[in-house]
Length: 106
Length: 121
Image (tube, rainbow over all chains, first blue to last red; front, side, top):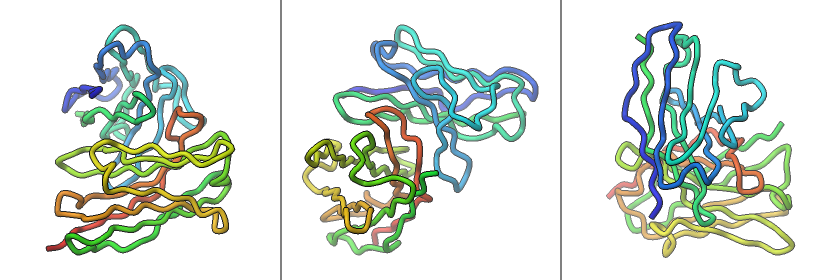
């Protein structure tokens, strides 16, 4: 079965750029999606189709996807960006999620 | 603006059936471009997609292999909602359950508020 692998945690200083990776076999051949989830809340879509931002998502959020790795980047990281982030892809009409990455803004 | 409102019991006894409903506003369960998903989340499993239903001249559904023998997702066009039934539950099914919309097999762009379900022995 298809798997997506994320680092369990990433730390970043305020104002710096955070990068969260998501690895999967030939992930670059698929679309990657990213969700932000704050404690006690539902996931929120922050990046779709590898690089696109939904309306209302700050320009600080960007994405890329090539080879076996998709990356979510958050520039000028703020305290409010502290959350869990999940990548997602489709495989044979099923949804696959990564294990999630806890972003800590120190 | 699409909104998904979940309802259903937060406590289910082991071996019984878990049943949840997701009411849709701002879209139609019979939309030919959307699909209606159920996802759950637990500390041990993380986010786990369970399945979806969608209408493309007829009804289709896709299910995760892990629950395929126990799950039914069904649309109710008269109430513009869809439901999840998970049979023969065990403590392993204790989780927060979410409904969500996907468009064209792409992003999950709208999510319900989540329902915490505990399976008691």
